[in-house]
Image 1: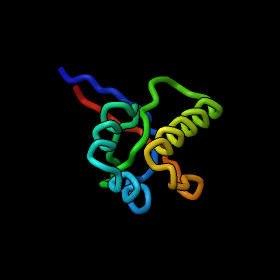
Image 2: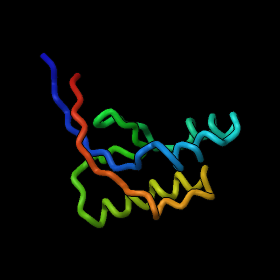
Image 3: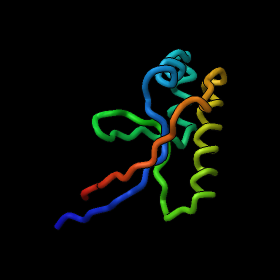
Image 4: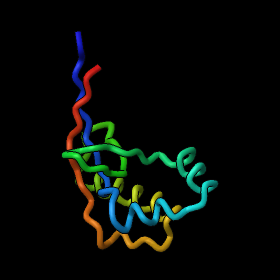
Length: 97
């Protein structure tokens, strides 16, 4: 019997300026990024996003803190990226296991 799990994802659309900045790093930087960052990719409505899955129910303040953590992680690897002009998305993901 399959079990159903619903998670909430908070992140940025991985296209345009964000995708360009992430792809411009050296191979070493990309490997370091994959090993060190807690950020993950998710797909929703045929689009790719980068951010975090929220483990438990969160208040608005906790969501804002998570948004800031995502921004901080992206700024480490993309210091010239201005995330303030990008929309952050919050959506559910359903997993079957």
